[in-house]
Image (spheres, protein in one colour):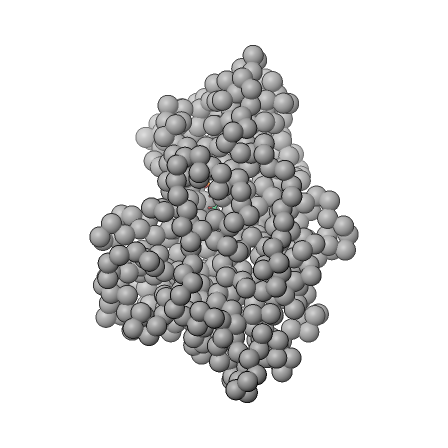
Length: 491
Ligand SMILES: Cc1cc2nc3c(=O)[nH]c(=O)nc-3n(C[C@H](O)[C@H](O)[C@H](O)COP(=O)(O)OP(=O)(O)OC[C@H]3O[C@@H](n4cnc5c(N)ncnc54)[C@H](O)[C@@H]3O)c2cc1C
């Protein structure tokens, strides 16, 4: 709410971006229930052993491939996973190397929402512990049009001087999302559905920025609410925003989740095996892969393909994919995402009463990975996305460092004297990813069934082929679903 008592408009929110915000608005506080039954994807629900066992090859050892292999093996199938890299987990990757004092930080998946019960149950199953992602004490910074707004724990901040409309000032920034699209979040929910009514489905045909404009939002409010995600289809933006509350992380690093799966599957994973060609035969699929420079083959009766479409589009296949599948493989949009991790000798921002978190309207949010951890050395991360990340991806290392140091310094001034290293992870420049995660742009939401649909003996899994694109829960559920599809339809 706006605090008018001292005549100043107030900012009552803590973090505000599409991919991570501590939203204290009414619709979150009211709670959104996810009643869809996902018990089939929980650890206790496994397939009963099949008498007709098949030889199944899984492409990729990210969470989708690992969960698919897990379920397939429990059903008694003969499973092999081909993974191009020498580690499991794909986009769940905790940076440890290159940081001092045993510090770590996430290069990819960072947060687990309270509502992602499938992810949380698997975390529990493997004996891992969750801890809060965001602090509840000290202030954070929001950089808007070059100005720093300090946001205290109670959310009240002086935003006089920012170019909001008088009405937006009156309702307060905390309530902007709720004011402009809170009613829609309740109708849309956090998962893609095929049965949205037409009044909701039509939101796939308009950008979020245009929807907000139609609803009377000022340019300043749009910039503040969207932080770089202006081109997202409104439907996708709002659906995804529902997932961004009550966020946790795995104590000790999120990579422990895929590593726990992989430890149990180590006899079926072949690391360093990059799939180069797929050939569909009458009763089998032949996969050609390169390992240690040599070409090898594996033949399977069924395949689970979790390779991100940005990579899959370059892999030759015979006979050709169906036209519908080819269209989505070639055109599905992966949002650029880059994470810059800064190790500093001291948590210098604390002297200003800050918790290290923040955001910049240039298109990044700031995480503080060492928050609540002992020691004076600290790790900040800039999570850059969309056009800002795409610009950084094009720069040489020297130019990128200059730019990211400058832009981080605007939010937390005083970085340079304390800076010990920067580690950059660009998901677009990663040859095994070619992008961060799927974001549906205008007119693309109806591609979803074609993304997921089986092509003969090849089933599809991965965050892209799930109701939760861009989330670990999407990867896990899609993997288990593909395993069930193989047993139900191909055995
Ligand atoms: C920057 C970023 C932030 C994120 N934040 C969150 C978050 O806060 N919370 C959350 O839940 N999720 C988050 N996610 C999403 C989450 O990481 C993904 O949804 C999930 O990890 C995807 O799993 P996957 O198995 O579908 O794909 P991947 O993890 O990408 O696995 C695919 C695997 O295929 C392999 N591969 C690729 N090409 C080949 C080939 N030719 N041959 C063999 N193997 C190949 C890759 O090496 C990889 O291991 C984030 C992702 C990114 C990038």
